[in-house]
Length: 549
Image (cartoon, helix red, strand yellow):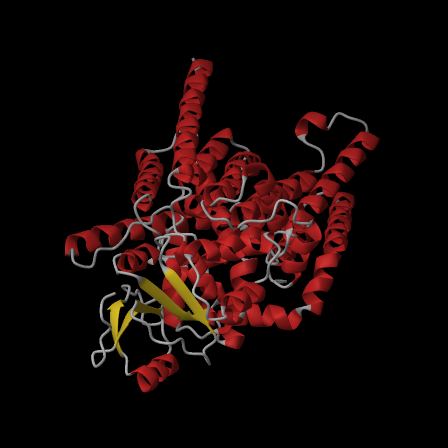
């Protein structure tokens, strides 16, 4: 009877995982080529096409009117583009390590450089992470059920589904984080239970192979994101800390020695890019200036809590409905309560708790310390917290699987998390999450207003060049786009002149020379007064109206 019950229970979990993965694939593929292709994704296409942001901005900012198709030429690599040119472009953005971009460049040679084709690479990495987190959770908590729950939660996580649809390195980073974590856990175990009867020399060979595996996976992580260095720091502390609870002193020494050798291998392999970072330090600082902009403590606290909640629950808040706000606030509170309970539970698991902490804490704590010193906002960037969010998901999976026969309330927690995740993913099919796309979230609304105008000419200054490339993907083919250096003002014409985020100095120049009147025709709803956004203005001369042609 026990065997029959076990088989039946495992069949239920197998069906649940299969259904969740199929739904996860559908959510990740839905509208893949239709969602806003924002400036960071534009930067991805530009880099893998062998251009730099500065080069594209300079070429486009000559004041010449261009069609959307002419702006989009920078998004498609030439068939014979040498890899050396791609590397030259990547060196000019040293804050972004090159692995993802090189893989994306190779991917476009196989599948093309359309928006959907390029994003499909991130979808692939996201699906690989499902297998890795299932394996890791199973081994961490010694439970197949934990692996099934972790896979199911990640498959339906609205946060990870959303980033699986971006032509950015974050899905690959999830893969390397889970891979290196799994490799470290196996290396610390040295010899699994089914191999302990082997000879000592075989055990030594297994241990060496595992530490080599960890070192290589860690190097790939470093080449995917510089923030992996902080995860390496946390894992190093875990290895030192874990030795205190081991019985075999010689094994402790072997583990520490193995970690040092693996870390040295990863650092040695990463050394070429480390030299690039040091040699391009001023460029890196300039490119990350946004992260040093001040943000209020209350705003940061809200974003941290929000970043945890959207791992499972992400639904828009309709301020006009008091009941709706109350229900969503309750859902968010219950989600946060489940996360907090799981973290308290995992903290009480000596070895596993330390391992999860090594993934959970380093990135947010170090970024927070830097923000406090510099008055910045890097720690309030949700995508930088991916290691912590993976750790939270592992904790929740382990906690929910910790009872062989869970009570009703624990089953209810799992059902609740899966339900709100599913509803959030369905909601996000029709909207852009608040933590994504930045100022390009309302491209569609802006483009609709532009496309409705007769003979529209869209004017903007050079700092918005990449925003205009992003916007060009949803503009009519006959819209003329004019980008210029702020010191040059284009001449008035009889066309409808629309301006994207015109600066005060630009408006003043237009008014003094052409007596133009400015009317703001679109301003997006802002979550806070500090939100970066794009607005659309119309310029008109009421004294000298143009005659229709």
